[in-house]
Image (cartoon, rainbow, N blue to C red; front, side):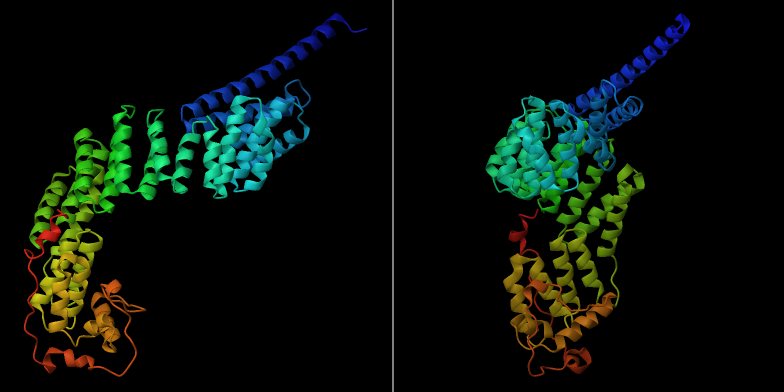
Length: 491
């Protein structure tokens, strides 16, 4: 017979174990509930941390009470928590055990959803589809919604935009809306996508989601359309100042890259006025200077911009954008700096003006100035040819000068498609002047020059050297005023 003290001790131990078991499972469920709330609020990083805590608590319950009342629930939550915290490699074992042994339909559905997410993260759409098929008829609304969202991801991984959009439309999960907009854009249903995006603008705002969505609109429908969508989003009043400034700054960057300089400058001006002392405001002020440099047509224009840049650098008002404005300062200095006797320098300056400052008219005028100053140079026709590609409004007059004054040049011959044996040698010479080696020489305006055609040898290269022939008269290069009409749009 068991004594009263022994019986009391046994009951106490059992009660303590039961209490610990209950508390462990309660804690695991508590962290899981918190994670779900954080997911609904768009706090993804916090949700992953809560899921990880839920997994730790659930694992402890499974380890200490493998045959307890809540063992199956703990096993599923262990795998679910690991999967949703980003540890799919560790989640595979508990999820496989749960799918093989758990009988409760609801728990099995949760395990299947978590395993499907991991399969999708591993780009295994087939495995995810097999796990999701039984859930398409689930009576549990939230799990059915999540299964539809994951089925949309399966279709999207396979490139089936129509099916993906249909699945996303059946889901009430927060990420399903932006995902639906994304696949509509990818599938070429631009009008439908833009109409749907307008409905999303009236809902919950998530800066990361809208950053990606606006980039998608820009890629699919063009930069101006992305700006219009952003205006409609901001008009809802749901966007906080910091997010508003960042979205406007990124929109300005897209507009600048698309050479919509006036619109880009307006965006930067909005940001600088809205948050002048923030990192975004300082970056916007510096990028307004970049717009000014891109609008430069003459060296005098570029020098005026550099004066403004110098004042910003000296005042130290650029803050976090100081390195950006210092780089701009160095670039402009190289472009407008004093020349030397090397003939490669104008091409280097023009290349920087075109590619780094994004100022094609300035680049064209630098090249044309070189032609006026060194008309006998072997590279004068090269400069004219490059200027044609940069200054379309003067194309006809520049090509006329090229043919009339430099008709025997290797560059003119190549432009006409005639045999031009001196072309490669001229390009090699310019490459050496620039300090680079070209494997396959290409003209500065390569898109306008056909590959030289093999044939009988043409005029020798040294026939173009000034000491062997009379230098040509300086060609009449069209002035800035003659091409002004075409540049007004640029301004």
